[in-house]
Length: 384
Image (cartoon, rainbow, N blue to C red; front, side, top):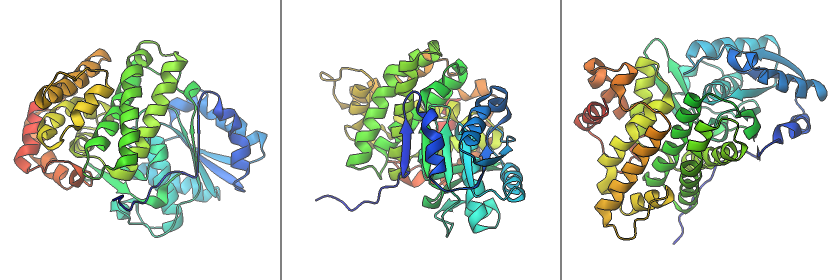
């Protein structure tokens, strides 16, 4: 019997090379008067923010700019952005960038309609009102924040990455134009691409997975596995960038509706304590967590291996599980991800604290195998 499900996705998603040029009429159709552009200084310097400004000017929509979003956006970023929005009487937002501007814009948009402090919304479903309209223009193939009901903000006082899961933050329009991703640095492409792969694999094996999310996750694994190396090696390869954009997008649609697992729980703490790139942390942790989870995944890791291009027909389950882990490790190595956490400056002084926080992370309950404090510490230690 089919299970009852509720599926969340943006009302409109534009994807493919050149779709940005069609955005103006869609924003105009929202009937908004003045928008806040939420981005970072790098994208302003690269003139990508100017593309958005030109689109808004062409359709007569006024705008203000907040470009102070930092990697792993903080509570202070959200507070400052909200002030700019209110000072300029903005009634919508355009988020431009990867996960950091997208997450920051979601937090600003939620506070604009619900009030309070961003810390009030940590956890699941804490807001009462739908956010201001968000037009999410994505520039990396990784976090998929533009399409999900999740956002992550760092509490800089507690050194904690707060995870918010909230249907009220869902974007009104999303834009994934691979042309905006051309020429991005190899390191960024690799980190965000491995983040997308982690989303897809965790979504596929999570307790909350079901038919639709499984189909999306497997296709995302296939697309990412066959295109990430080329996207890293050839930054202007439109085909590879397009496949990565699709892979990241549908991985986001999958995990947004079924959840993730302890790769993310553990990675969030590394970001909060050490301010490390989220995608790199996911990539380093992923094979260790998959090894921990393997006995609880049935035949799903065989299917992961197959989606990554491995012929498993003559393998037993343990061999197929090992093949999936090897394929993940090889892809990570091929795109230049560090082999361990020690290379990122992590030491064992914070492992117990991070492990305790990981157990309380909203992603942990979705893991196919229960994780104890000892387990979490051991995974961190193995990943060093």
